[in-house]
Amino acid sequence: MDNQQFQYQSRIFKVNSKQDIFNGKASVHRKKFKNLPGPPHHPIWGHLLVMGKYRKTKPIRLHPHTFPNFLDEDYKLPPIYYLDLWPVNHSMMVIHDPEIAHEIAAISSLPKHQVLSDFLSPLGGPENLVTMEGPLWKKWRTIFNPGFSAAHLMTQVPAVVDCALKFAEILDGYAVRNEVFRLEEAATRLTIDIIGKVIIDHSFNSQTTQNEFVELLRNQVSWLPSSESLNPFHIWNPLRPIAQRINTYRLNKYIGKILDSRFSSHNATNPKGRKQKISIDLALETYFSESGQTHDQARPLTMDATFRRYAIDNFKLLLFAGHDTTSSTVCYAYHLLSKSPSALATIRAEHTAIFGPDPAAAATLIKSSPHLLNKLDYTLAVARETLRLFPPASSVRAGLPNYFIRDPLTGARLPTAGFLVWPHTMGLQRSAALWGPDVHCFRPERFLAANADAVPANAFRPFEKGPRNCLGQELALLEFRVILVLTLRRFEVVAAYGELDGLGGDGSLWAKDVGGKKGVQEVWGEEAYQVLLASAKPREGMPARVRRREA
Image (cartoon, helix red, strand yellow):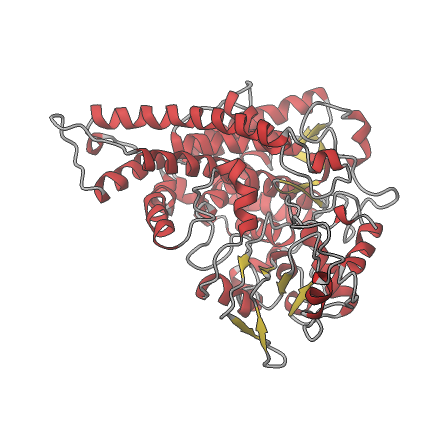
């Protein structure tokens, strides 16, 4: 058995000593699991053998967050159980009970697990909103909240529309050329252009040009350790720290220039006179207010080094997270709708009813009356059902010695100390016990208001819940609606996994993606299963073809 196959996301759990397995530590560790719920436990190998079975039968690059679902299906496990993956990975407490998941995310004092810091530091820096704790997190959440409020985002709709129109032009070009392409690549460049305009008022123009920041960010993603690779050089590549450090320096320099320029404009112009503000302006204003500074030409505003460093880290994180998950959700929505003619007809009918019969007129109408987006009930239901089936990520917490969880079945006190506590989003959102026997089926109607009572409480959590929910969820859903309104009635977008050979080694992040294990090319009947590339993405970047619809 090759233990390199069992990893959580992009980190390898490092063994302090190669002798640990043989000096008695393994025996002591395994005994901790003797009376804990979980799949069959081996006294020597723990749960490594059980997990090995899935690595032999599932696609090579399948995202690890699907494996607990298979365990549930095969072993009929309780809603809370443990996985002993030492020394290859962290020992885990997997939570498939929605109320306990809510307790962990919204009520508990459990801190974020170190694995998140290890993973996000190369992308967002060490001082980011996801991994901050306590008063520091509250301070920075307060600084960024105004820029992501629903009311403020409505003022950014014209910028979103302009980016989506450029995306429609690109789709049209592929249609004219009758060319197979990676939909994820195109959608990623769209969403990074949107998030750039919305939060820092910067035009990356990545849909039409090569941009330094975008290429640096993508290069940084390419250097993340692979959780599927069996190549030791790739997993423990000695060049990785050097490449990541260089990329981080250049990314910080790029964002630092934008922040400094915006700060200078605050000194030069009274911000109260500005007609339109974006996230970076609102963040600066909140900072100045909290630090007791007011705009005064005789006494210029100042920005201390700590604020600048934290701001750069968080803007990097927002740019990464703000584009990464939305692009995949858009791809999956096109794919799922293409396979469901009734849902596709329904969403197109909704767009016609609200924006009129001419798809070309929708952009102008959205810009002038952005509130019309709030009437897209079925489109929003499509977004939620897509996120239910293909959540982009999960959150993980670190257990504490004095924190126990009450087993919902037996009432026993279950320990969290020493465990990665995982409110498992995929397990909750694809649980037949919670959602019914058609849990793997695409049914947007689940999320219509008329069916609200049938949605299991706290089981839908792609953006997590509680005070540390996703800051950008309103923006993500806003983007989703605009993009679909401006493209669904103009184009047919269909996955083209049968034409992978036509893509070849195109030099993208996907050039090394070999798909799945020979003979295994689908999961739950789906060929566009998720792989791990920073976040959960459709396999091979979702090769696709697009054609114009007849008027």
